[in-house]
Length: 268
Picture 1 (cartoon, rainbow, N blue to C red):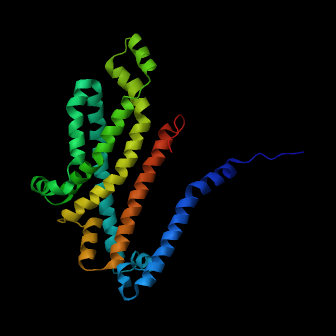
Picture 2: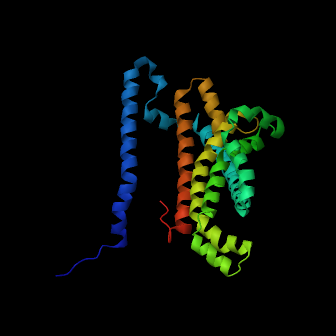
Picture 3: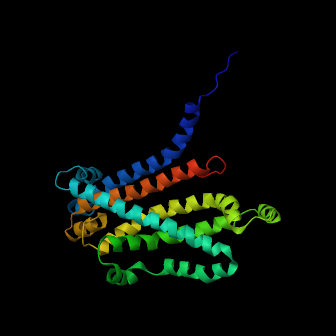
């Protein structure tokens, strides 16, 4: 009796369904809940506009150009800050990994940078860097930096002890150990940090735009403007595209992580 071997495409179909099915079900529930809440609010329905009215603002001639242009500007700020945060974070972690005393000396400042309320230092950032693109990028870097530092350092220090001793027996230099052993072993943690920082970079870009509104407006500037004018449908549309931007960047770095280390590490 002949048997059929499932093709690669048929094997992937159930996994894709399991991956995307639950989020889509939750999205459908949230949309239904939004319609119910909108109907229940009656005359105050402007507080939670119907989803189709929000989506219509993404294509309406009077609002769509502003939203999509602002989204592009926010994307530029977010990616610029994310790249800088990745470079600084990896470099910072590599320096701390050299000796234990360097880690003890420098890591508290990484924690301190993460713990400082960004609103408390916003005036200082404006004084030092102005109130336009540069200041927005600085806020983005501050918010997105810590996951890169902590994840990279964790990855560098998670090398198998036996492998490290083998390199020592071979008389490998410190740079060789870093290049051939520690960095490859740290890649899963580095990409996990990138994925976390990717979402935070969008938050940082929007926060920066919210407070530094000179120059070209981004999504944060639009959110501030729409909330001041009580334009709820435009406000929800701006928040929606900002959320989708964060999810998109998160998924892109997840895909990059799977491409880089997926063959030998289960990068979810």
